[in-house]
Amino acid sequence: MVNKSYIQTLIDSHLEGTELFLVELNISTTNKIAVTIDSFQGVTIEECIALSRQIEGNLDREADDFELEVSSAGIDQPFKLLKQYEKHLGEQVKVISLDGQTYKGKLLSCNTESFEILTEKKVKVEGKKKKQVVTETLRFEYPTIKSTKLEITFK
Image 1 (cartoon, one colour):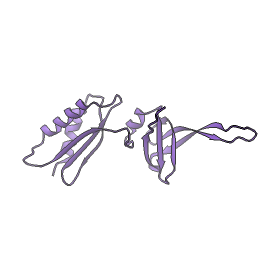
Image 2 (cartoon, one colour):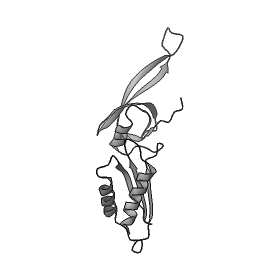
Image 3 (cartoon, helix red, strand yellow):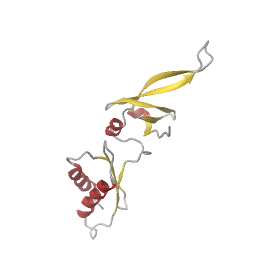
Image 4 (cartoon, one colour):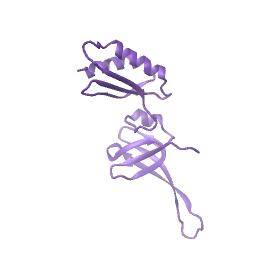
């Protein structure tokens, strides 16, 4: 079985001094190593290849048969780290709470306990013919949400 702490050490040493950060490291019972990385400037295929070679070059295929996958955090994947929230400040996100409610809005702020989004909705105002746009700031604590993803829009 591949040693997770050894893989973690290889990744940490490779990412040290770069803008890249580790989002997730999973090793299955069948020795499939899945590494997800990200950065505030995005991740190139060359950076994924370099990390893959760093890991593979330090493992012995004779001792452990393994499968290795190094990828960047996809725009359709939920945020897993505070750094991902920080990266997407000012952008549109979709939040799903534990009770299944969906909220969409602009990511305003984040810290280690919670984050805030600015939502807009049209509501009927008494005495007006047209619906009016009302904005509301919503605060979420991380344990109360199921997922937060970047909202992909084509405007």
